[in-house]
Image 1 (cartoon, rainbow, N blue to C red):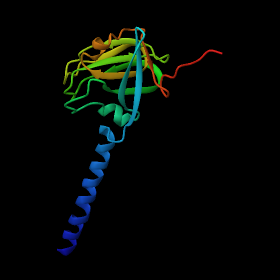
Image 2: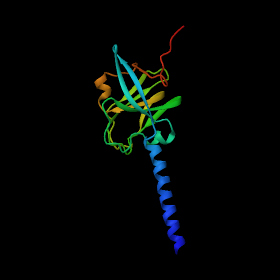
Image 3: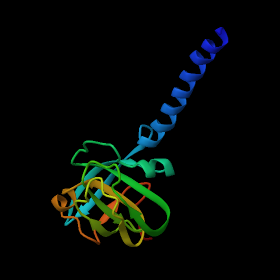
Image 4: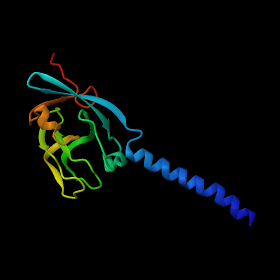
Length: 161
């Protein structure tokens, strides 16, 4: 009888700790923070982003969040260009999805996506990243296909020699 109590006191807290560890990595507690600069008509806009680098982080994204600041977002970078598809499952915030090519140029913008929808949102063309912003921010900033996103890691400015 004593053995069962000891197991219950040690195994259950351990399992709870493992569950917390696994889910905390997925929801972004450990996501790297970066700043992106978007140039629109000679004006620079700085956006603070969380970077969803791992598969788990990318799968979780902004799910279950109730708010996101107007100059905040999440960047989903990929290693190789491809047609990307996203959805809004378990995402409570309407988003603008900005699809970016390897040169850092916006290819497509899906504006004001429907919260909690399982409808597939496609980049339509090969891209290397998706930037998610609160709905309406793309229009506020005047973002259009062809505008450039800059970041020292993902979209560095390449100088010509």
